[in-house]
Length: 352
Image 1 (cartoon, rainbow, N blue to C red):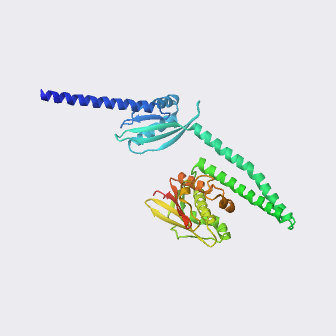
Image 2: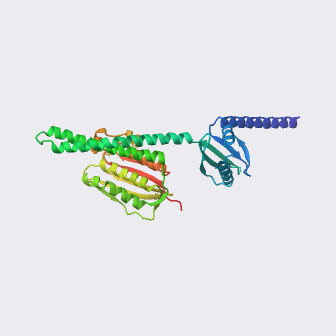
Image 3: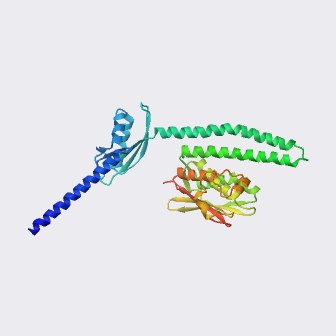
């Protein structure tokens, strides 16, 4: 009797476990069916095992599209063997689509494909990029004309009227500042929406030397000495060289413009577990702790008055952050008010 009771309890527990597992699987299927992304699960032989509602709709829509069928077959087969990948497939339509297909290897030697239609996102990004570019180009011409006119007025005005001369010079300065903002907006828009378009091997030594040359004139005019450690030219990154130079140059310019006359800015490189860390160290005014989390936001200025005096656009550090993200890296800052700041750009080294 006692043995029978134990067996009954064991059977009951097993039924509860199966029931709980079935309920969980049902909940998972309901959740996956609610996703707008197509999800397809394959077994260890690469055969389709289950797909959610969005996946079924996408496959039914494009069942005759050879490129999509080939991509799914190739990617699921590779994922079963542990090789994951991403691929874009353009569909002429109707409806016109750009499908992003991503593969994931599963623990039971199966595979999972995720399919998302990013066509509208691409169009939206393109519209935003074109809008910024068009507005910036339209503004550049009249701002340039204003600067030339103001410079002419400043030269021609009688020196006996210093007030008007001063106003004309202020117009010249503000015109040049607006022109720099337009240039930075164009660069930021391109970096944000185009990503790292080039994938080339770039020496860190070349990146840093070109970046320093860009800001050397500003450093000299402010009586700031800018130096760098000796860097092995064999240390190589993979990515968009133009963007990488721009990022380091913006860090250097930020350091120079926030340093006082006679101080030094130093650029160094350290290697750490597959990453290169480019550090730009200044002896400037430093940053209060409550500002550190926001310095990489566009148009955010720690000191509004000083930024206007130095001609900063408020976009340089935002450009650095986006370049870092495009290259699988990050940028950080540590600072002591009154002593200076260290900005560190952490980027993955080229894979051998």
